Every structure is written in structure tokens, then in C-alpha cells.
Image (tube, rainbow, N blue to C red; front, side, top):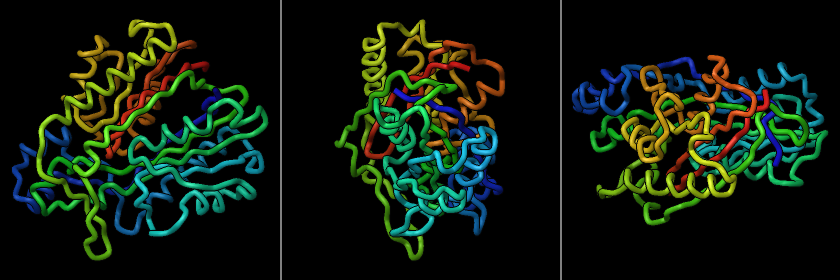
Length: 319
């Protein structure tokens, strides 16, 4: 498999405040704090667009690596499919802004698992040679799809916005993709769905049903077991286990179920909410900036998405 040559993340300029959410919805601030775990978190400002955040992250990566635009053969924009404009290609928009001509530009829609899905597709054997690259852009506008006036939507009030850019290559890399496995449980496909509301699409939940947290742990555990078996390792060999920041209780329950100490994960709930598909890449960047990565470290990224889908992507840090 190929690998990650470099990556970066980008945040919007505005912040959501749970006190404003409480005033709009009537849900007590204390109840919202148990969902968001922080009082404020990054969201898109009025007039700010997700593709612009992805572009900023991509520019940082290309400037840092010095990879010329003509060596990038694919540009993929990954997210929910609810782009900044309908019937439109954000991948093509960002590629043009970066001066990338001649690349194949397309989108992958798998919600917050889309970024890892794109990485999986582009790092399979033969997808890239040693002299070419692919650029994966992770971006969404989740906060714009939440109705803060609706108390029944409070489980989604922790939806923030962020973007990431991941440069993949077939040659030497900083992170080698050693394994990827994913699955979907379509029994939950109608639990959340978009609803047109004027110029917006708002996410609505269907009738409440129990068992989603159990499904998260069950599917993640099965995928981890599959990965461990395929690689011939145990959880003791996993240096870091990073999880989408959707639910801190589920995050800790999963670690306990797997027997992985919390010290081997990253918890950003004190300053960030659920930042979409960028969650695990933000955590990976935190490990890097905190000098917590060592050559040969195995890192599992646990991602999940509406639908519902789950994925385990395993990286080896090569420095």
C-alpha cells in the first residue's frame, strides 16, 4: 500500500456557543455541556465555505513538501456530499485554485468516514507509482446542517467544522498505510436524514431507538479484531488509537472494551467538538506536534459515519 507524505488541518474563524444553543432550543446549558463537553468550538462563519478551509490546508501541505502540481494525478474531496454548492465539484474547484491541471478530480461521499475511504482507495497496490501523488481533501459544513431551534436535534449540537488535506504518494512516506477495513450496518440508514429547509438542508433524526452505542462498540471491535489478525499483532502493539470525537462516553467505553489505555488515545473534548471527518487527523497532528510519535509506531484511526459505517485504518509512522 502507499502512504501519507504529509497532511495538515485547517479551522474556521467562528465559534459556536452552547449558551446561544440553549437560548434557541430551550435545552439547559448543563445538558448541552454533557453533549459538547466544551462551551465553544469552531464552526464556519457567515460567508465562510468548507472548500476554502480545505484549500488552505492543501496549500500548507504543498508549500511544505515542495511537490509540484503537475505530479498530482488525483484530487479527491471527501465528506457528506452536502457541499458548499449543490451539483458541483469541490475537488475540481480546489485543484484549479492550486494550479493542478490534468488531474482527475472527483468526490467521495461517506460522511465522516469519507476521508479514510478515499485514502483506502488511493493507497491500494498500483494506485500510485513512486513519482506521482494524490491529494485527499476532507471537508464538510456540518454545523450549517444543525437546527439549534429543535431540542430533538440536541445530539447533533456538537457538530463543528474543520478541514484537512492529505498528500498521498507511492514512494517514501511519513505514514505507511498498512491495513484498512470497513463495514456498514444498513439497519441504521434511515435513523438520520437531511430535510430541505429553504436554502438549507437540516439533519433530522427518525424515531428514537436504542442500540446505536452498542453497535459502535460491536462493529469497531470486530474491525479491530480483523486488523489484529491480518497483521499478526495484539492491542499491545498498537501505540495510539484515535477515535472520531462524536461521543466521549463511547470513546472511553471502546477503549475499555479493547483493553487499550486512555493514555494511548487523544481526547480533545475540552476544546473541540465533533469536527467531522477531520477528527482523527486533528488527533494525529496533535501527536506529531506533541512529539509523541516514534519510528515504527502503529496508529489505528477509528472512523464512523452516518449510514452507519465504521472503519479502522492502520498507519505505521516512519518519521
